[in-house]
Every structure is written in C-alpha cells, then in structure tokens.
Amino acid sequence: MEQVMEGTVNITSAVQGTLLVLTGTLLLILLHRIFRAENWKNQSAVPGPGWWLGLGPVLSYSRFLWMGIGTACNYYNEKYGSIARVWINGEETVILSKSSAVYHVLKSNNYVGRFASTKGLQCIGMFQQGIIFNSNITLWKKVRTYFTKALTGPGLQKSVDVCVSATNKQLDVLQEFTDCSGHVDVLNLLRCIVVDVSNRLFLKIPLSEKDLLIKIHRYFSTWQTALIQPDVFFRLDFVYKKHHLAAKELQDEMEKLVEQKRQAINNTEKLDETDFATELIFAQNHGELCADDVRQCVLEMVIAAPDTLSISLFFMLLLLKQNSAVEEQIVQEIRSQIGERDVQSADLQNLNVLERFIKESLRFHPVVDFIMRRALEDDHIDGYRVAKGTNLILNIGRMHKSEFFKKPNEFNSENFGSSVPSRYFQPFGCGPRACVGKHIAMAMTKAILVTLLSRFTVCPRHGCTVSTIKQTNNLSMQPVEEDPDCLAMRFIPRAQKNISGETTDSQT
Ligand code: HEM
Image (cartoon, rainbow, N blue to C red; front, side):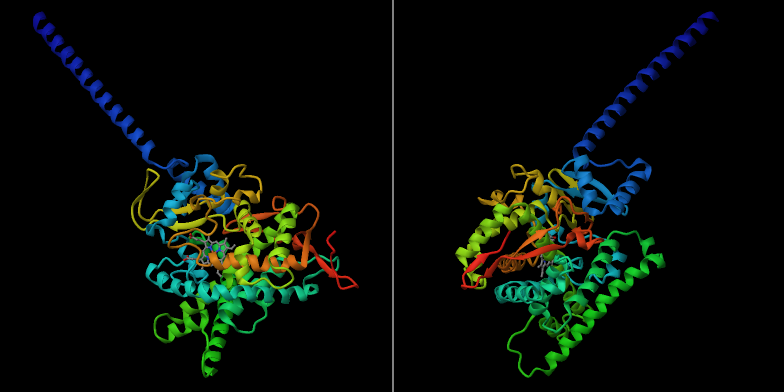
C-alpha cells in the first residue's frame, strides 16, 4: 500500500515538475514575444502621448483647441521630437518639423488632401469647394488651374504696377488712417492696399475696401475658430449662430460682387482681356463649375492676400525697425537701382538686399507657420508607417528654426547671403499643393515695400517688437488686435523737397 502511495506521490511530483517547466517555458516564450513586439512597436510607432484608456486623445485634442493649432504643434514637437503623433478630434495626426519628412510630404501626390472638421468647413463654404481646403481632388485640380493662370504670366507682370498704384493711393490719404496722436493704423492701411490690389487684378468691381475688410476679418475669425471644432460645437446655437452669420455675410457680399461682374460682362460688347472672375463666370456658363464654386473661388482669391501678405508686411516693418542697418541698405539699394521713379517688374530681380530681408523675415517670423494635409494612401515617412487617412501637420515655422540655419533664433539677413537648399526653407510649401500665389506674393511684397519705404520710414511705439506684441498662432500667426493702438506706428516722410528743390532725408 505504502509502495502504491509512494508511486502515486512520485508520479504527481513528476507531473507537477513537468507542468512547472512547461509553464516556465511558455512564460519565457510569451515574455520574449512581448519584448519583441514592444521592441518592434518602439521602432515603428511614432512617438507621442499615450492612449491612457482614451484620456490621451482627449487631452491632446483639448490642447489644440485651447492653445491654437500652431502653438500646440510646437509644444508636441518640443516634447516628443521632430516627428510626433497626437489626436485631433479622435483622428491620428502626425506633426512633422524634420525637413526630410516635410519635404517628402510636400513633394508627394499622396498628400494633396487637407484635413479639418467637415462641419467647420461647411460653415465657411470650404467643404469640397474653393481651393484652400478643398479635398475633392478632382474639383480642386480643376479650380487650381484658374488660380494658377491668374497668379502667373501676365497677371504676375501686372501686379507690380497695380501694387505701386494701390500703395500710393492709400499713402496719399494717410490721414484717414492716422489718429490724433499722429499714429497710423498700419494693419488696416496694409490690408486696404492689399485688398485693393486683389480687386484690381482679379475682380475689377468698384468696392469700399474698408467695408469689405470688416467682413473679411469676421470671416477669418470664424474660419480660425471653426476649423477643428467637434460636431457638438455646431449644435450649440448660441455659439455657432455668430460664426454662421459672419461666414454668410462675406459669402453674400461675394455673391453680390460676382453678380455685378456678370452684369458688367454682359454689358460689354467686346472683352479685350479677361481676369480671374471673368474666366470663372465663363466656366460656369459652359457648365464646368457651379455658381457656388465661382463664388467661393472669388472669395478665397480676395481673402488670400489680406490674411497672409498684409500681416507679413506688418511683421516686416517691425523687423526693419529692429534692424536699422538693413533698412539703410535697402534704401540705398532702392536709390541705386531705381532712383526717383516707381519700381517696375524688371527691377525686382536686382533688389537682392530686399529679397534677402524678405526671405529672412518669412523664416524668422512667418505668418503661415504650419500646413495641414491628409494621407490619401498608406506610406512610410522617415521609417515610420503612416496609414491612409492620417492627418499631417507640417510645422514649417519650427523646421526653419531647428535645422540648417546657424543661430536660427536670431534675425540675420545674411542667412540668405548664399543659396539655401529648398528642403530647408519652405515658407510657401512646394510640390503639387504649394501656395499657388508664391510668385505673386514675393512680387507684391517687394513692390509694396519699395513704394512705402521710398516715401516713409516707420516708427513703431516704444517697446513694440515682433517678440513683445501679443499674438495668436491658431490658423496662422496673427497679432492680437484687441488694442490696435499699441500696433499703430508713426510714418515719417523720408524725403522732403527743400526750398531749393533738393531732396533731403527727414528721418530722425
Ligand atoms: C506672404 C504671403 C504668403 C504666404 C507666406 C503664403 C503661404 C502659403 C502656404 C504655406 C500655403 C499652403 C501650401 C501647402 O499646403 O503646401 C498656401 C496656400 C495657398 N495660398 Fe498662399 N501664401 C501667401 C500669399 C498668398 C497670396 C498673395 C495668394 C493669392 C493671391 C495666395 C494664395 C494661396 C492659395 C489659393 C493657397 C491654397 C493652394 C491649394 O490648396 O491648392 N497666397 N499659402
């Protein structure tokens, strides 16, 4: 009996031992697998905040809504590196500030879509319409040809004369922008110049720039607010109504202007030359575009420059005052290359000091700090897998300050003394979805600055610099205009004719 018992005990302990060994082996295999999986994950997954049972996505989205898109991108690139993954409205979003990754996206046809809240885009008329946020690729390609035609070739050539004339027109009535202390509302002045230029080039309908600008301003602020809001935002009538009305106000105004244009075309016996609006109206007549497309394209063409160029010019005027030696060199260059006459299209290529200053300004303090895109197919970026439908934000502002440039946080026009490889400097993007106005934007900036600086030197309020003024970086980098007085500047006539008819510099 004892022997039987002993035998049973031996068998039991043998089985237990085997089980122990088996379990241990299984555990080892499992641990090995987990370790390999973790290792693989770490190699392929983009760094970013954790999922934390769904709290991660909520926190990262809240940060975007609270800080503004541009500021939140800088926060995440700072924390997780130049390629970081977050969530916006529950969607995986990769923020890139590494030049090789940014360049890959810009050059590829796989990223010509953009992302944003559908309801937000519907609110401002940009959902599958117009150009800027249109992700209906077939329609976007079609309308982009109209923009390209208007912004290059003869339109580009003409832009210089138009800028000179529009700038002089507003400078001649400077007192209308000047307060009782002698300070000029420079942002409004620049916006009036730019909107007048856009109208003369693309629409050619008499309008009040100041009235239109108020509507553009409200539209822009709705655009900025609505862009990545959750759907619930658009159900809150008391919040949403104000934005809906602001968007509709500009859309209605554009509809009126397009209708006026249609009448003007109908009343003209022979059209010697066409413009952007005329071409779009013809396309509608031929059934290529619908009325809403035409209205939205005209609207976006009219708002594109005031929202970017005027703010850029404002930052440039501040930067000039902070770098008075550069201002002096630019004025010398204008005098030697152009003299007393108006700047012409052919002069632009000779204004090298001015060009270096403009490029460095766009690098150092850009108005468009980031670009929003969406992946149309699966891809790999810098070794990381990016699935179809992933949102991408190209943090170009940060890219310009983290690679290639020596002392990137200091303003120095000599950064562009020799040529800079294009992958390191992309203020307008490049590739199939680049800024379609990049050439005209440079021409307009030069023409307006030369005209303005030939007549005036500006003097911002004491202590007002690009780093001290309050700014937001949501849709783009914008000065906060709650107290426009602190952004105002004195305009001092640069040259006055003295009694004997000689020209003297009255700059103090
Ligand atoms: C300093 C001035 C300007 C800057 C810094 C700027 C910058 C940009 C950038 C970064 C983009 C996005 C490009 C991308 O996704 O890769 C863009 C798009 C665009 N820009 Fe500009 N821009 C400026 C002036 C203008 C002007 C003057 C116009 C037209 C009058 C214009 C028209 C457009 C349009 C229509 C798009 C959308 C293109 C598309 O989605 O196909 N921009 N701009």
